[in-house]
Image (cartoon, rainbow, N blue to C red; front, side, top):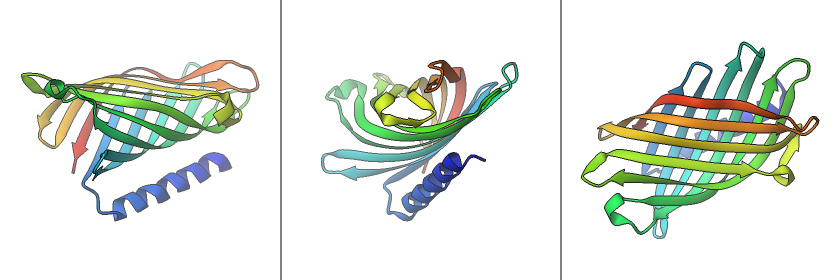
Amino acid sequence: MNKTFRSAIFATAGALSAIVALPAQADYAEANVNNDAARLAYGWTTQREEGQVQLEGALLFAEEEDNERDVKLASFGLAVIGDAGVQAWDLKAGLGARIYAGQIDADPDDVTGFGVGLGGEFSLRFPQMNRLGLSSRFYYAPDILAFNDVAEIIDFALRVEYEVLRNANLYLGYRVVRAESDDTGDSVDIDRGVNVGLRINF
């Protein structure tokens, strides 16, 4: 395992251990999959006077048999989330940053790198159907904030979710995670497509 990626795994695990040890208002765990990728995440949210602070650690595994490519991408994010002023839709918006570190095993050369992405996210509930919701996030790490073999990272996700239980949601999502090689300038789709997932709130 590449040293950069291994260090990122240890850092993410250490951060998650610290999160679990803190007095949290709400924790959540989620997993989503498609034919080529799986993403596992654990998050922690605490309430502040001005809004919520959310921390999340995630691991994305992806493979493409046609291109003989395996990808491992770890990320850790922090976002400040608050009421966006549309109470009828329970609209919440957030701004924050995510740290990414990953490894792409592919012929002829492997690609490793890390970056810091800036961006935001939102979530809402449909009036008269408050179990049905929509959420999205977008984070972008430009060349100036991407290092080693990576020139940029794009992380976009959109999902429609249904609250089956008060502490458990099922969702259908669409995700694009893309990285650009610093050496060749080629863009690599780490994951692109529809996924299904489960989120459990504690």
